[in-house]
Length: 389
Image (tube, rainbow, N blue to C red; front, side):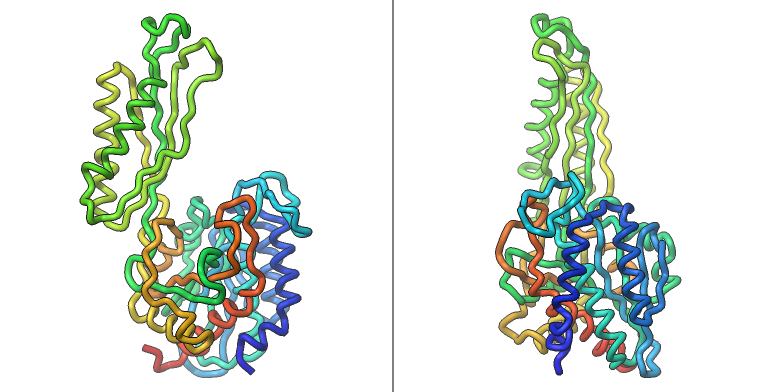
């Protein structure tokens, strides 16, 4: 029996787990209930459990039947997003303002499915390391686990991650060697002017006018400073100022994100942002402070592990359902930090078409749970052998 068929026999139970997690979403570093469920399930299957790794993370350790000392890490993220769910599903979020809009409930369930299968079969030589990570959505969960000694306490020779893709073909796995997802910085810009009556703008320094000029000027960084052959995105996603119709406010605030694949371009964008802010501040007589924070590293898949992932997906799903050269994504993923520490690969698994990720109408495709779990399980079975390259 193939791993897909065997895990499919548990699909109803796994779907129930996924939908329970969906109904009870928890934000980053708040995944107490979720991590408790994960730990209890792993323990019930005879897997060694370590809790509170990186605050709310969980690590499971399972030894195979062979004598290989190779250790294969499998990682899933657990956190939800601060989004009000806009579905009428029977298992919709019961927590106001929070939902699993990215499918991390599904990722957690996929890894649980793989863990259960491997615990039952033990048809592998080395050790499986199941990594359930908190706080992927911009709060640094991977870095927290690494700082807590993830790979020194639980060494891995290779590590693999998986994400659902509602805009891909159902059941198609895509994996790209090299840079596959962008680095991300978040920024906050505070503009301090001088408040005044709305009818007497000459007595103030209007931060809203400064804000408008700065928004326009910052867009020239990508269009006029960055190499046009290098990918870069600078998006201003928040604009805040004022609270009354007839008052020129004292302050204004901008926030947003930078996405890049190249360290030099990343440094250039940050440098130009500060230079432009200083110039605009001098022009209007305002004060501007710029805070830029490194949130995600560039996600770089290792060549050998990407090839192994593609070969295993070909074995399970067929060559027509494997994309070995997908376009890089400007989205970011903090699994990148684990890949900086250990070679591995991050792949995408297509699900049914529907609302996109981070959308209030998103719903994970439960039908791909056995596919993702089988892929994870087969990675352990194949890559934990002593002769794995």
